[in-house]
Length: 227
Image: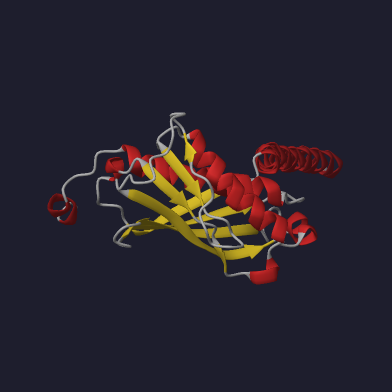
């Protein structure tokens, strides 16, 4: 009788052990199955952008058919590579041109602070005496860090590479501030690509300009009391 009981106990313990092992294996597989796609997605699509308005645009910017694009003031000095700064300023101009929204786009040279020859998208000559409203796109490079790739790998995507720009929209004739936005681009890839971060930031800047220069804004009074 005792021998029979011992055999039964051993059989029960064996079944319980197999069951526990199966549950643990299932949890491990499920954990891998759910974590790997997330990590793969982060590695392939490692760029993400966040933007928040500092001063919301409340004026109707559709009145502006001309735009002057000024180089961003680099508050990070030598912490950001000079080629990246030049690329950012160049790409912002190129992206705004690609909007096909403005009749005249005038980049300002970074070294001299003087306007380059205007880019007339209509192909006609630029009328120097044209006194129509002109929008000024300017701003600052507020933050840049390349991060540490080794730490990003260990921390599963943390220790991001970050680029932050602050963009202002002004009326050239009155110097009145029309709007301001903060744009941050993060790269969570193990091997950060500064050029892709710069291109993404330029895209976001052009999107901000184009979005506000094309939409119908409500009157200031209605905007002020909007919930």
